[in-house]
Image (tube, rainbow, N blue to C red):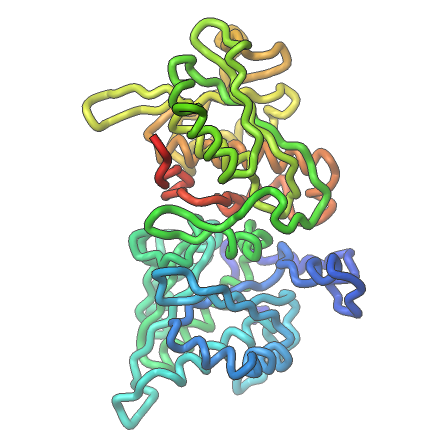
Length: 456
């Protein structure tokens, strides 16, 4: 496996300085959480198991999954059932160190890859066999893959996946968003492999090796995300508030939205019903400062005390507020353009621009939104002297996606400059790997756009 060619840059075999990652006795609950965390260089797989077959890997009283963990030394987590979803996510992860013997040739592989196939074999064994030769039994395997990792499977011009198809004769598809199960995250792609048992096994091994060699930049968030951000017909469900299991030093994180004065009624609602609902559901503090309004604008300040590993109540609330506090222009009936304006301290604007404008260009490319840092002469009167303004324009989904990119980078910068994010190994400024998985709360549609029901 170590000889696999890697067009996207092979992993660097990161060695953590934290002794907890090397095993040893667990001393307290904080140590246990850290030892169970997914590291930036770990090998991670998310296998979709049909609900009706989940018993084959759990066993009575959990005896089978315990045995699989013991045999492989990989961590195996089976997510809860998501309402209306026929599959459950099995998260399999371990160090990337290749320590386990695998297959007829006793190749050395990572514990997670070994465990992936043990889980796969047990699930496939539950398939009904119509032919006396079970090797010709047709099976389908489905994996969830983060969007920033799927490129290593596809390759330039689709060459990698086509080579694997040719070599294994398996049907391999990367299915569109409309095929994502409800247990998927917003940033997921769905990888599907079909064919007879032997063909699928060969293809799965090649794909698993590529995923091993190219870890996702955002995989360290998967454990918190998987329980906080499921896709449902109404949006996303989960996160219960800012004090839900804080696991690190808390920081005050705030965002300042510029809102047209004429939109304030839509933000507050009759008798304050809308703003109270957003405060309650997000867990953030929201202050509408109409007294500071000058001309056509006023300020909305959203804040919360947050831990880096937890979903952000502040971003949750901002995304809920966005459609209500943005300027809306009708190009033609049914075709609206939204403009969202965010004030950012001048000292932090660099984390959005990047060297030579690399970061802002990447955000524009990813979201297809118009993202501009306005010059001083174009700032609204409500802005402070030490602030700059980020202006995002596009349709509501595009603008929401861009706002998510901007705010998660600002949030990560807060923790990074405090010394926590970078020292914990959970955030690397070269990666910016959030991709939407920090959003908690219900009501988010594609790209984080709020689509849930709100009282009029």
